[in-house]
Structure formats: structure tokens, C-alpha cells
Amino acid sequence: MRFTLHLQLLIIFLTLLLASCVHPISKEARKQADPQTTFAMVSENPKAFLEDHLVLGGVVIDLESTEEGSILEIMEWRLSRWGEPMYLDNSGRRFLVKTSEILDSVIYEPGTLVTLAGIVLGHETRLLGEHEYDYPVFDMTEVHLWESPFRYGIHRYPDPAYPHYVGGDDDTHKNPYDPGYSIYPYTQYWYRNTGYQ
Image (cartoon, rainbow, N blue to C red; front, top):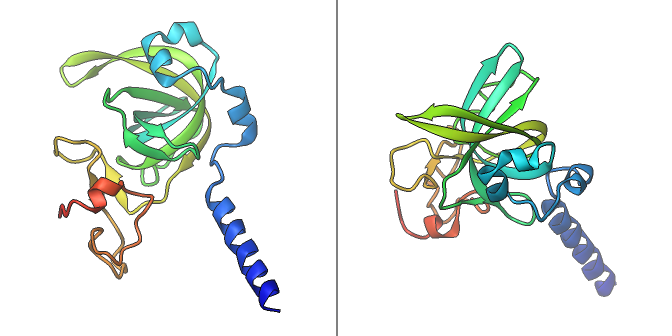
């Protein structure tokens, strides 16, 4: 009897663990992406990878509405093996994602973490501050927004990966550094333990 109970608890635990480790991008989309093709390679020479599929992610910087749909500007973050944006790459590369959908600016607000699948369309030169910047451009085929009480890259700290807490009014733990606040994996270990307020 006790063995059966332990076995049932183990099965429930493993089921929950596996469910939490499911990649947010479909298997079909991931199969189309060549694992040897990295975002860095595409960023260096988008023309060499036209029509290639890629799984990538990062932080929403801006959302632009057009007559054809929407354009997201995203700062690249490295993805975990499960597709979650984990930390900002030192290069701070940006890219554009086009879609025929009209995206909601409240949902795709600056600082939101996203993982997406896209097809390389080429590049587009735009002003970034006072300088021209060549953005790799993707056609979005799938997207996943990470539900997190934090926003990134929307403040003037030297480190754009520094998290800014935007939790709801009904949160019992207002401070994200409160030990009772269950924040992993939404902000990195070193921020949870540095005591920044």
C-alpha cells in the first residue's frame, strides 16, 4: 500500500516536471530550424540565410503597427534548452519580427520576454539613437510570451538585463527579493541573491 502511494506520488511529480520542461515552440517548427545555424551567423549576413527557419527569443523593445500588420523590435537573449530566454548576450543584438497579425501593445509591452519561430527575410537599416543599425528581419511563424512579473531593458541601469518588478496589486510578496516570493525561472540567480532593491 505504501509502495503504491509512493509510486503514484512519483508519477505525479514526474508528470509535473515534464510538463514544466515542454518547449513552447512546436516540434514541427523546431524541426524546420537547422541547429547549426545561429542567430549570430544570421545577424552577420542575413542574405546568406534567406528563407531559413530559426528559433530565437529575447526582450520586446518596441511594437510598431503598420498597414500590413505589426513589427516587433526585440533584443536577443540566449535560450535555455527548453526555449526560455535566460540571459542577455553580451553583444546586445537586436532584430525585427514581422507578422500580418495586429498585435496588442498591452500584451507585447516593452520588457516582455518572448520565444518565437521565424523565417529569415533579410535585413533592414534603421536609426538606433543617432546611428544606423542593420536589423536582421524575420517573418514570425510562432510566438510564446513568458508570463513574468518582471520587465527587462526598460530602465536606465547599465545592465539591460536588470529586472524591473511590475507585479499586480494583489501580490502577497511585493518585493521580488523577498525569500517568500517564488520567482525562478523568471529572473536570474545572481539578481535574486544580490540584494538589489
